[in-house]
Each structure stands twice: as structure tokens, then as C-alpha cells.
Length: 223
Image (cartoon, rainbow, N blue to C red; front, top):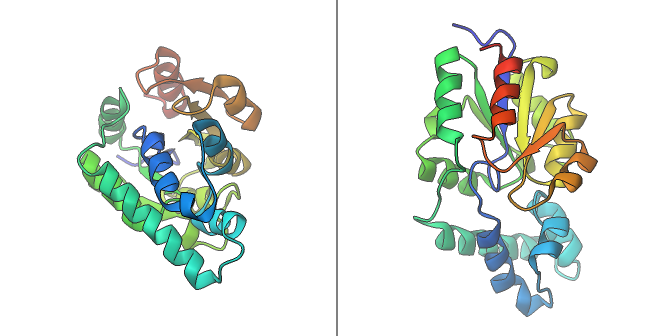
């Protein structure tokens, strides 16, 4: 059974699993010696959802690009160490993926995270094989908040934006998916309803078993 132009597109960090606290700890471990310490509010505004290239350009401007990349790699290694064995899916995620599989609806992961992180997360959740593609923002000409990663996700799934849904937890992610023409549900792992809606989300939910989310997905996917 084909997806008939439909697709579900998911951010990874903070959407499939709530990993923001682990990223915050890793950022503070690595960035504190460079004069930057983040609390959760500042991290959600200035770090979460942004590409590593944009983060390093903003916070490490005094270093050459090679050193910036090395510092970001150190941060991602710290995150993978912290996250090892601690990744748990957001409530209701597995039921949603099961339903999409039964309906033949393709699923795509769209993230600004490095590929090593993305693959570790998906493997840790045991769901790598369920995704038709894993789109990495830093491997494209533009990452989120540019719509290109989501446009690439739609292309990989042979899907139409008006027949698809995206799930995001960050401002930049919601902006990217919305700019690609995809109705986007904001997951309230780090931001509140008002912030996500202001970024362009059509609705928000705390988890994938939220009744309104379940109804909206069923209606859009026609199952």
C-alpha cells in the first residue's frame, strides 16, 4: 500500500525523545571554558534546533573554522556519552509509528543534529529501520530554520506538503517545517504552547498520545 502523497516527518531531539537536558549539560561542559554558560531558557532560545555551524559561528567567533568544528565535535561526543542508555521515546510515539507502518505512510527524520547523533538516537530507540530517510541539516546548503531540510524530506518520501504532518519542538524547526508548507504540531518538551504557535505550529501537545494530536493525525492521514 502506498503512502498516496502522505508522510509524517519528525525532528529527533526533543521530539522523538526529550534529550534537551542532556544537550544542555554537554554544552555547558564544553562551552564554559570558552565563556558561555546556558540555563534552560537561554538554551531553548539560542541553541536548541539550530545547526552546529550557526552555533559555532555565533558563540566561537574568535576561533578559526577548524577549531570551531573541533569544539562542536567535542560537545557532540559529550552528549553521546551522557545519552548512552538513557534515551526513552516520548509517550505514544511507538503506537503512532506502528499505525503509520500499518497504513503504509512513510516516515522521515529531519534534524539539524550531526548524523552520528541522529543515528545513535534512532538506534537507541530501536526505530532506525522505520524511517525512509534521515535528513541532516548540516549536509545541505541550508539547515533549519530554512525550509530546505523539510523540502528534502518530502522529496525522499514522494510526499505532498498539504498531505503531510511534521512534529517539532524548537522555534527553528517549526519555522522550517511551516515554511515548507507542512502543518506542524509543536511538542512541548522545552517550549510552551504560545512560543510554538508563534513560530507557526498549528497545535501543540505534550506527547504523542495527546487525544487531539491522535485525532488530527488520523484525519490528515485518512486512517
